[in-house]
Length: 167
Image 1 (tube, one colour):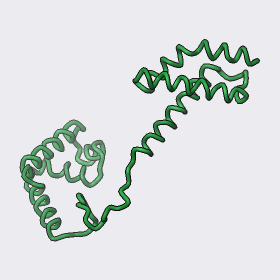
Image 2: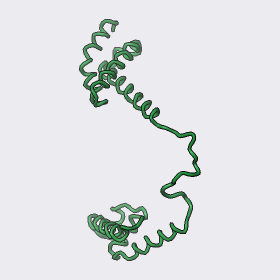
Image 3: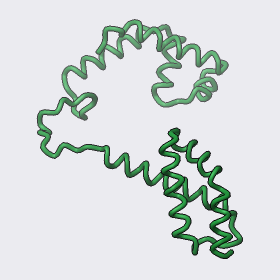
Image 4: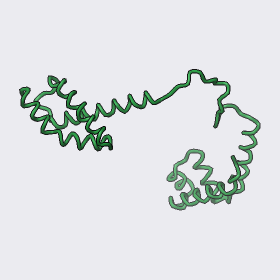
């Protein structure tokens, strides 16, 4: 394909390119910018196109790749690292990996609440928390799958109610 045919095909795809860019960006101005960037990239890389490839697919793939690269670049530039942060004064939320007296008390309190659940709820709930899937629990207990799901649901609701003040 010669240069003039290549350019005519590219001009003929402009409407499709804008529509695809609108899908990707959800913003008209950004879509026009992306279409322009894609057009320039395609023209610069005309020698990489071979005649046995779907031209429209190739152009739209170039557009998608430009969009993805721009998005990744945007995410990287918006990520801020404070180099002056004093890491010793951070308020760490969650599990630090250390066992504290408070966490042991909390675990004992939660275990007591679980032990107070009705046996029909406690067994499937404990199995689920241990890593069993619903279908495995149903098979081991010999009950229908829906029964297992409802018992686990009711156990969760009961635990939420009893531990509502728990932080």
